Image 1: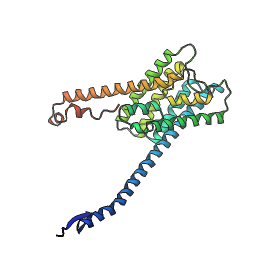
Image 2: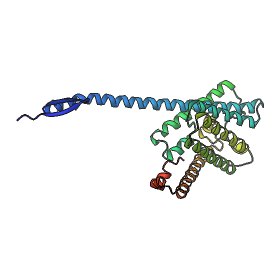
Image 3: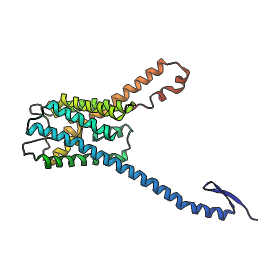
Image 4: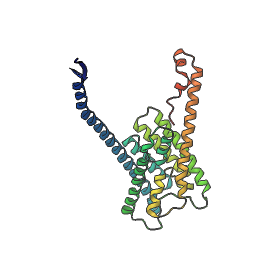
Length: 286
């Protein structure tokens, strides 16, 4: 007895016995594999673009931060507030130019810890950020040719030990993360976000700079330390920004969830009541 089976191939009906349908399925397998390969290639292309943007953004921020610090060291043409202003403008420009780049390992680690960034990309992003920082410092050496006594990295200022610089970097990084998370959760455009974060970086650097140098970015400190071979207090700039930003993200998340819960309790509308507290704070951003 002959059994007819009707199938679909690319939306077109195909009638025949079981062997014909099986052959049609085998014919479709290469096409499906090609689509998977194309999707994988597209994903790799996007990842490469993201890494290039991270490396380039880190290069620009670290390069001009180091140049401004070196101009103050070598020629005394910039006061420390002017150095902070330069850094703020550079950060604002980079974020307005490339969009939501991190260029800071502490930011990337914090977003990953709060599930706003995939852990699988974390090592690649950090490598791109540190690579951009190292290349920026090598470029600074090539362009400015500083002498051995000139230092454009970050280190605890004389007379303050390690405790106070650590606390300052920790607290400033926490505040900076609150600003970043607030901007990320809002609907502000790239320009507004860049200005807000740039102003935060410059303002916080102005406050804590006389104590710690105002880094808040492990890449900003590690690049010059490696190129110049000066590692005094480097652990502060590796640990404090990460710990501070984790605290800042936690505080921001707690405040946002509390706000949503209060709004839920104060709003008795049926539509709101159907959402529930869990849905009210599901979109909270660290």
